[in-house]
Amino acid sequence: MAPKVLWIGLGNMGRGMSKNIAQKGNLDSPLLVYNRSTKRTVDFSKSLPEGKTEVVESLADGVSRADVIFSCIADDEAVKELYKTILEVDVTGKLFIESSTIHPDTTEAIAKDVVARGAEFVAAPVFGAPSMADAGQLVGVLAGPRASVARAKPWFTGVTSRGEIDLSDEPYGKALTLKVLGNTFILNMVEQLAEAHVVAEKSGLGTDAIQKFVDAFFPGPYAAYSTRMRTGDYYQLEEPLFAVDLARKDARHALSLAEAAGARLRNVETADAHLAQLKEHAGPSGDIAGIYGAVRKEAGLKFENDA
Image 1: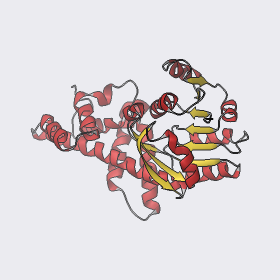
Image 2: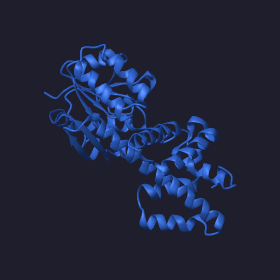
Image 3: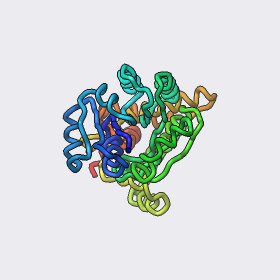
Image 4: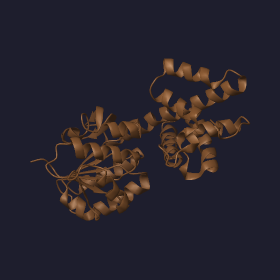
């Protein structure tokens, strides 16, 4: 008999992952779904075929009924508060799969509390954009006891993900160290594109040439972010794809890891400074691609490129 699964959190990544579990996971019963906003949960449930999900309004009720509990929410404080509530319930024998992007130390502390209560824990952050989550094309990073990781794998490759980085029997925090450092590649990519487009515009080369170069040599995420900058998408979104506050949280975690290791991430320092300028200009609705606007302003151009 397939386990009963609870999904917690319906941000950009959570919606895609939970949709794929509901539709492609080996479930005998509807996916239980919980979010602080009941309206968001109901709207999400209505977007899927009838019978694929069941909205739970009480976190305690959802955890009590589930064998496997996924969580993917915004930041460290939210995750800590979530697990404080969860662990008020008897969790003996349950498997917790935690996919939030948080500091490795936070993950280790939560895992320790969960295991002490007789449950299993897998740290399982994922790489990929919201569109990849929706398409089931993420890459999961799974750390924890081998048996627990094996128990978690059925919901990754072929369901939410196109592949996994298996860190079985490694400390939980290693998955988050990789995730945080991996996200610096995104920060650096956006920063590099923003700087190149601004210099190309101001030097007279023009951004068309940069776009053609990126399309030819760096298709995929580079090309997509470059297009978002040139089309003005970076300041026109109603809801950010990668919110400025979350990007800054990732940058803080990365800089903290580097400092603890006696190293520096100078590119991240630069990108974070531009994220701070983005936040000042656009507020919490700013998207990471808005680094382009911050670099433009720094160079004497308007934040918006009036594409």
